[in-house]
Amino acid sequence: PVLVVDFGAQYAQLIARRVREAHVYSEIVPHSMPVADMLAKGPAAIILSGGPSSVYEEGAPQVDPALFAAGVPVFGICYGFQAMAVALAGEASHTGLREFGGTPLSIIDGGVLLRGLPDAQSVWMSHGDCVTVAPPGFTVTAGSPAAPVAAFEDVSRRLAGVQFHPEVAHTPHGQEVLRRFLYEIAGIEPTWTSNNIIEEQVEAIRARVGSKRVLCALSGGVDSAVAAALVHKAVGDQLTCVFVDHGLLRAGEAEQVEKDYVAATGINLKVVDASARFLGALAGVIDPEQKRKIVGREFIRVFEQAARDLEAEEHVEFLVQGTLYPDVVESGGGTGTANIKSHHNVGGLPDDLQFALVEPLRTLFKDEVRAIGAALGLPEEIVMRHPFPGPGLSIRIIGAVDEERLAILRAADLIAREELTAAGLDRSVWQFPVVLLADVRSVGVQGDGRTYGHPIVLRPVSSDDAMTADWSRLPHELIAKISTRITNEVREVNRVVVDVTSKPPGTIEWE
Ligand code: XMP
Image (cartoon, rainbow, N blue to C red):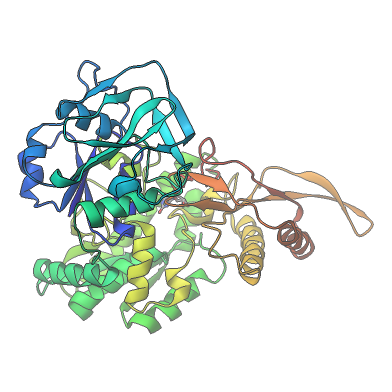
């Protein structure tokens, strides 16, 4: 693999993802990992990420010079670039000049990384320190107003680095720079594809599971669907899927899982209708965190019961989960990252869990999972589905949850989804929550009469991985059509509004 050494960067994930987009497998490791352990992984290259520290600060993480003696290609980014300079006898210093955001890069000598790229390109910077003297043997290939050494390389030793962030979308030629490091400086072949992952995982699952029974909780979402399909490919009918209908699904969702998914995969599926139980437990509850906890708890209970029913036939040893890499990170599983919301499948698991977990997607990102799903032959309606949270519509009704309110929200949500699809914008919008402000009423006029109804909030967002998001600039005609249809067709709704908040400061869901 290519190892991305995480110095506490927000962007370490993104670097790993960009490397994988270049069809090279990559993994993130903490900077605290000893160099010997990194080398034991047989890395094809090592990328040192950015980080919040200042290289000369007391206790700032350093790069062990032994790393450069091993002959492994190394690429330093931002903090990693400065740490690399210092470790190799160059100099970095605190000049008092900071660069943040889009910055003009001047190419001094294109070298391998920057050759042929526009002289006046903009790059994304975020630094207060800079490299002032490149280490011996290195060619300085670019500078910026506040960073005299903004890129350097020593091709003979296969070492290079940049002060800017090539991994972010705001550095237009960043992916090209990264590719050049991987292919031309490190000499890596771009061979990593979804088919490789499928073969590797199928082998690993077979070896681990043997002839034991496996259970999977299917949510109807992409992740658990792809995880189940992978496990099914590996061990066939040893897998049973349980789909818990908690009554908080959108219109048509339960049917889609029951029919389309089984038709596409031939997987054994047990559907448990537990809506009465969930709605009972949620009755009168307004607090978002309490809703989340109730749903999480009830979900596990129903699931345990389903497992016991199955156990009556044969012992179940393994539980499949569609956990993705961002779930692990958001739940605080990354190095030095904060817990934002406990995802039900990571932070919400009971301590006395009776199963061994099989999580074949744990190192992957959503778009990679989609590619695998497509390669496994899952239908597009499943593979390209927008993410939907485990707590379902309960966290999209602001106020207490009941059947009547669920019916209003389902009707409005269906219209929004239908119109988005009709406009051909499913792919450009990452997720499209529709929220019912159930405890808010406003005055309207319909026909010749006064109405006193509820507002519906449209929350279309664009995102890469749900960690950050921006509100989608939907065409006004589309918003108008959705608004007209919802207010005409859903009697209780007399107002439609659009949420124009990014994440941060908002989150994608309202609760
Ligand atoms: P927020 O609202 O935190 O959501 O910006 C980020 C992404 O995660 C989804 N989400 C969840 N998914 N269980 C899930 O499986 C949960 O408890 C949960 N909470 C939020 C949300 O829909 C968005 O895609």
